[in-house]
Amino acid sequence: MSVLVTGGAGYIGSITVRDLLKNKKKVIVIDNLTNGYLDALDKDAVFYKGNVGDKNLLRRIIDENNITSCIHFSAFAYVGESVKEPKKYFQNNVSQTINLLDVLIENEINKFVFSSTCSTYGEPKYLPIDEKHPQNPTNPYGWSKFMVERILSSYDDAYGLKFVALRYFNASGADEELGERHDPETHLIPLILQVAQGKKEYISIYGDDYPTPDGTAIRDYIHVSDLSQAHILALEYLFNGGKSEFFNLGNGDGYSVKQVVETAEKVIGKTIKSKIEPKRDGDPSKLVANSQKARNVLGWKPKYSQLEKIIETAWKWQKDKN
Ligand SMILES: NC(=O)c1ccc[n+]([C@@H]2O[C@H](COP(=O)([O-])OP(=O)(O)OC[C@H]3O[C@@H](n4cnc5c(N)ncnc54)[C@H](O)[C@@H]3O)[C@@H](O)[C@H]2O)c1
Image 1: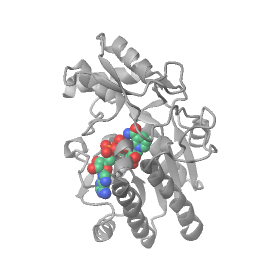
Image 2 (image 1 turned 180 degrees about the vertical axis):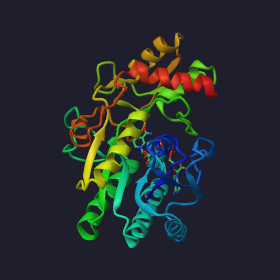
Image 3 (image 1 turned 45 degrees about the vertical axis):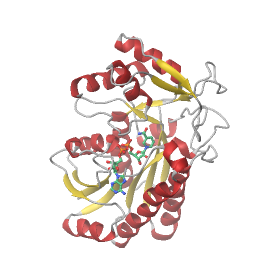
Image 4 (image 1 turned 135 degrees about the horizontal axis):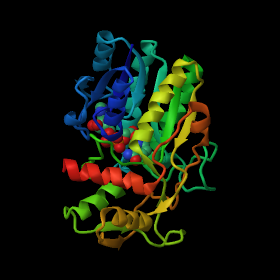
């Protein structure tokens, strides 16, 4: 019995693949390496290079391996880019996912874990955001994930697909071996670390007139190893007969961009130069999670609740590997 992991050479995917293997799961990865790295992929995973929407390749992978479940990480995930190039996002994140689902259903593989996002909520009506919060995304990336959530619900009703959609807040941090390496990097913590290493001159702070105490946007940072743990629990939940569900994954603490910079300065022991720039299209002011449901239903217990610890792991990885 194997699990098919799409996007397993990416940031969150590669760490989850390694943790699945540690949990004695057989792992088959499909990734086209547009944003992933082969050197991040554990040697014990079986790797197929290709598009997740390539039905013939998917059928071959299923023929060659005894796949009983799928964790679907692969997607494009740049909010700003999605505003400028929505067709790229709907094509890759929605159309390709439909092809993947069709082949899974055709082969009676009906356990599916999906990387969704807090971007499906849009501008919050209340905080912290729980799973019942209305979903009204403010950018095409968020809409693409929202559409897949709706498709999954319909596929459960019609074809009995059992899924867990995990709505991550801001993935961050690293473990001993693997960390965040997006290119271009748009995530705050790795960008701050690049400034600390002298690879970038300053960090851009997009907007300082949000309705927040210091005017900069507030986000909830969740450690990548805690995300990985949630995927393993989600699979167990589905194999134990769990019904289709949506779960938030965050720490429940919000930090403003300025607070993240200040915390990083403490961890690193250096001043981080920053510059205020115009707000980016599609960026909500505050996103903070209520993740009680994942704790209650999945038994999820995040280990990294403090931002300082999260940044420490990211900084250690960045220094060691780069
Ligand atoms: N990083 C975050 O903070 C965050 C937050 C919420 C949700 N997510 C979601 O989590 C998932 C993983 O995010 P990540 O940060 O690890 O991104 P990532 O870019 O590092 O990983 C995505 C992987 O998918 C691959 N890929 C993309 N399109 C593909 C396709 N059509 N066929 C095959 N492979 C393809 C890429 O090459 C890459 O290896 C994404 O779905 C993202 O939307 C991420």
